[in-house]
Amino acid sequence: MSSLEKIGLLKMDFLGLKTLTVIEEALNRVNRINSLNLKVEDFSIDDVKTFKLLGKAQTIGIFQLESQGMRNLLRKLKPEKFEDIIALLALYRPGPIGSGMLDDFMKRKHREVKVRYDHPLLENILKETYGIIVYQEQVMMIVSSLAGFSLSQADLLRRAIGKKTPEIMEQQRKAFIDGSVKNKIDKGIAEKIFTFIEHFAGYGFNKSHSTAYAMISYRTAFLKANYPVEFTAALLTSEKDNTDKIVQYIDEAARMNIKVLPPDVNESFADFTIVDKRSIRFGLGAVKNVGRTAIESIVKAREKGGTFKSLSDFCERT
Image 1 (cartoon, rainbow, N blue to C red):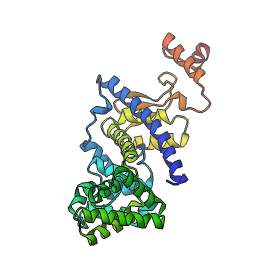
Image 2: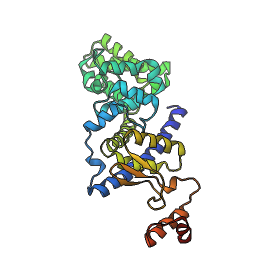
Image 3: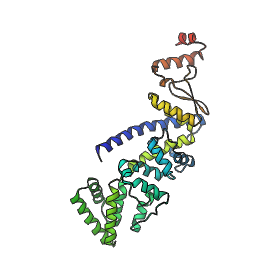
Image 4: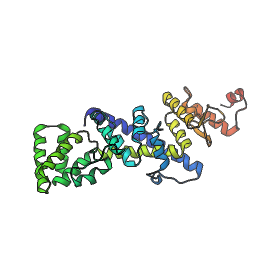
């Protein structure tokens, strides 16, 4: 893995942790307002509303899926199952895009190109990715199933493909073909499959990483699709220090017919709060130069003496 890819993963991990906070906060609001005891584990993995939202690329505020490029891709791909999201996150990288691999994936998914397997054993391994090697784990499964490689041998091949060292690759090619022939696989087919592995495995991504990110993406999309007001309030609160994001998410709220009401000393708290079924009150914490102490003072005075009657009343009591 290159240094750039490592930096990218670190960035995604930071954003992932931030998004987990949004999910937790949104869920707290959902449960409190609707008197539920919903947990993320209860989210249906094949929710119709969620996949409709994804297919329409209404993914502003959704982890890893809100960029313009990703939304364009979602419109084309139209994910229909959770595995499509996993693959999408693994494929949306310069390598797969530049190689045409992403286009090939979409054509196969939409049955514009027929999916063929050079050997029956490949179907079970590559069926979920329409006959294309997308994950590093698939490489290891292929060489293990067809050539009898041990896990350590399979991992050695995976790393060799990444480094593209000619001598090691030639050794691995021979070992794969010999092992396949030993397992009664035609030598010509074994050679063809190894070329197939070399071509796609260089772009392979770690499926466990992609699955973890896809789960966060799916859960945020589920909340946006099923509990849009609670999700938007939590999302706005998470970005209260980022004016550009606040503007973007307020625009998205308007598209969803959710009103974001202006700040009000008689109603606002530090965070963005839900006023009614389709309205959110702007959080004082997102107002520039209004500090936490001032907000606490306002809320405390309001709780103690009721709403403020005038500007002078407000000044005297705070």
